[in-house]
Length: 253
Image (tube, rainbow, N blue to C red):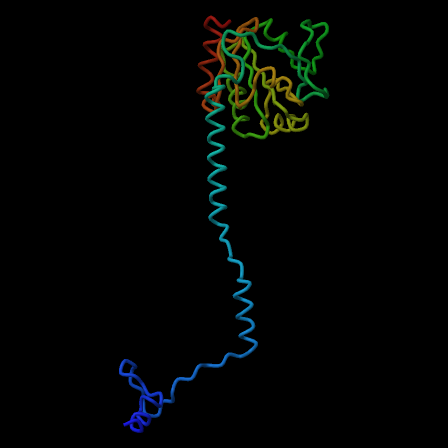
């Protein structure tokens, strides 16, 4: 019995009933031998796994979204705390006086916020607001030369100044934080004939609270503001002309 058992197929490493059948010529399974170099590399990989590659695109999108949200919050905060009506001089207030160099003159330098209000001491190369409002109502535009939309406001003012029946209204514009050369170039390119001054260091703009452009100040004779117009809506002669007529023919004169 023992000899039969020792010589049975099971004792020679044959398949168990649960193993899949093996072809007659299929050798018995042999554990593969690893190449020593590969084995060493595998052991090193286990000890020092390669760092994972981080996809930064998700973080870039999050940073962009955060930046956009921050801009929105700052804009809303600015509008709710200051309001768009804080720019410029509101109706009922007096225009701050100044004399600023004219763009088409040889006068170089900053504006004077305490100008002499007499013709005897006036330099004709400067725009003197004090002298203008002493004589008649004034339509004064603030703009920047880096904005074509703001320059359109001066174009509209130029066209309105040629309209019949608006005398004795006076028209002028000030380029805020603009060099003499840039202001003169804008005058030449647009063929403006109304007085255009430049505010090289922004002191006039600060006195008037110019935070946006364009801004139009319509002042009665004497310098009291009748109305303040802000925004691109007024950068057309069709929209601006009725306001100037009201200033001249109404209680504004």
